[in-house]
Amino acid sequence: MNHSGGAPQLLPQIRRLRGIPQPCEPRCPHAAIPLFVLAFAHRAIQLSTGRKTGYPQNAVLTPGPARRSGYSRAMVTRADIGVIGGSGFYSLLDDAEEIELSTPYGPPSDTVTIGRIGSRSVAFIPRHGRDHRFPPHRIPYRANLWALRSLGVRQVLAPSAVGSLKAEYGPGALVIPDQLVDRTSGRVQTYYDANGAVHVAFADPYCPSGRAVAVRAAQAGDWQTVDGGTLVVIEGPRFSTRAESQWYASNGWSIVGMTGFPEAILARELALCYTSISLVTDHDAGVEAGQGVTHDEVLAFFAQNVTRMRSLVSETVQALPEERTCPCGSALDGIKLPFDLP
Ligand SMILES: [Zn+2]
Image 1: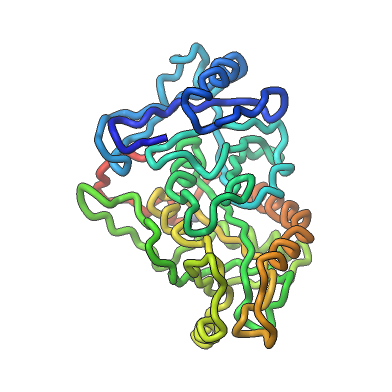
Image 2: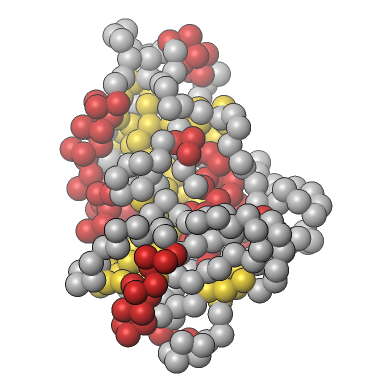
């Protein structure tokens, strides 16, 4: 779908996880029309642009009129907490439904699954798409975070697989980093790239409240828990050379991954809480003596631990505060934004 010309059309199609067939071309607006009609009968949300501009980055996404579809706002699908993670997390959610969303930045990685964990409403996006079609440098990061915020999400958990740069954190350790180093290149890392500069504080990139909750949940789940540490995010998709990895380790950095940035800064730019939950799958090349990690090894290890990770995310979601008292929600206070946030 091309959003580069005119005001983006933001007609989400909704379908139940079960019972409504998948469209052959889920991202084609024409193929999606019958789905939308079907979904209309079940439940509807309407997101529409508020202003016309020629550029996606200037577009405004706001909830549409409450009764536009004939349903009250009370029935509009919303979520408080967002989880961006791997496909093993679907079974977390009760009463799950799928929503297709478009944003001014194109569609998210995949349909957004919305459901409940205990009393909390959760929106889930598979970061790489359900079929893992997006490599780390091609993930639609801006669309993913924008979609979550437009659904009402204000707190985001980001489970991911990482390599360890420290001998003492082996496979199975769980790191809740408190710092980040960006070694990516060429990724769009801001929403504010036109109509004035917006400088957002990022000294502490992660939500202190979300971190504390995740650490407690990990400790309660008997994980080898590392409270704090620096995640270095590399461009990928290749893994690090041994020299690069040794350099990262010599700086005192703890873990290395490929997706934690720009996810973290985009969350901050939308005043969202963002907490990385990083599962160590291997020692990175600079730490181990062998040939370094392979992609298959990473996936296999993650698969072995996905049940535990699901449990950890579930516990963390339920322990997150209902009302935010952390600074994340004030990240944009006093800053004149070029457009309204969803
Ligand atoms: Zn926060």
